[in-house]
Image (cartoon, rainbow, N blue to C red; front, side, top):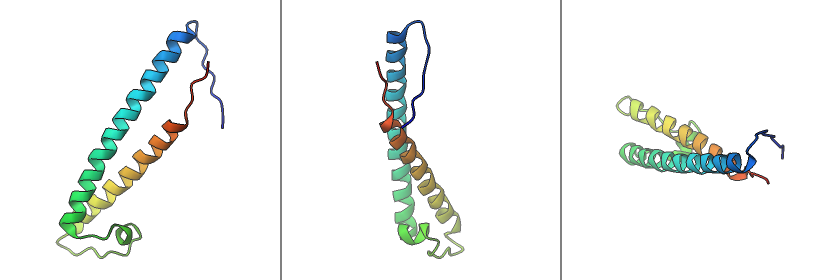
Length: 96
């Protein structure tokens, strides 16, 4: 794990500000993940898509569902990115 150093004349205040910023970002990402997951679930239900097959590129894209399936793929990719950001946030420690 790498260390990032922050220099400030008020370390206690800066520490508190950083912790609040991380907490807020975590809440925003959790909310975004929830909304994205709901949207993906709705699209999966609407299209009847098998998510594993879709992500593996094995699910057919019938002409009438092509746009919905592309949107679903985008939502799944967005969800993956959000979850990765959350994993990174969970590893951040603010030291004394």
